[in-house]
Length: 321
Image (tube, rainbow, N blue to C red; front, side, top):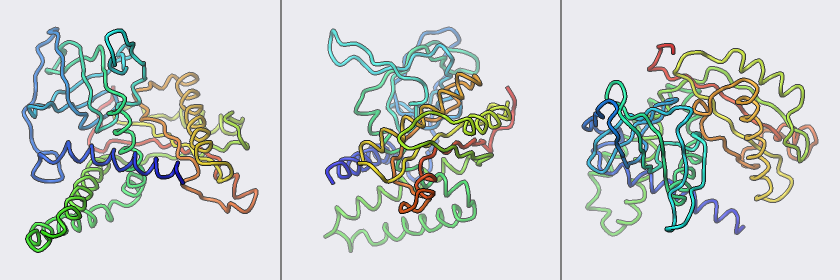
């Protein structure tokens, strides 16, 4: 129970961080902001929150509400900030750069006024909050990709709910705290749906693992080989990797095991097929939170020991590299 409470608290804190970054806008959509143009070859440093990520492109909004387009490369360093004078950096790869993460980017200007990233840093608390918000949004992403019509209806319902909340604020003065929480949930949910609607699921592959194992089977490798060999060459795709475990074992063990399985798939795709890490969204382990089989049977538990790999297309981009 203590492990579950800690996980729920982390998710709530992460969602509130994302919401606080958005309350300055007049609606759930990103409000227009001034574009920050970096002079070519000029050194620059930008600190702000990641609004969107599309492959090797990030959009960072700073405290002056200026948007900077950041370009990632294979040499971009991603790491935590120093905690103390003699403290060191903790390195990460570019898969951790998810929307909602507060970062500091150092680099120099390149074509079209963009910032070519040399070094990206962030704090550990900001990273934990952003990942917690990302995990919370994952189920909504799947639903949005599968049912566009439902997304449109949900947006209309959220807009109607927001209007009703505005007109009844006086009547709900006695329950102001509850109203504030509800408003934040509406803003966060609507924003996630707005971002996720930009992507379509092109292909989904599910690979399975033996009990307590993170080793890819021959069948799993064959499935990943087929997926990677047909990976789109366009610059508008991302790969999403989600790991799971069967319900046996405790919560912490299942979370760790599912994360290691997701990492094993990412390692295979990057090492064997040279898929850049910047094409892969942060791989996540969800433990036994989403079960698809009957936990009482051996065959059912086997269905839960899996990793789901999805190839996502950005509908707004069609140009090739």
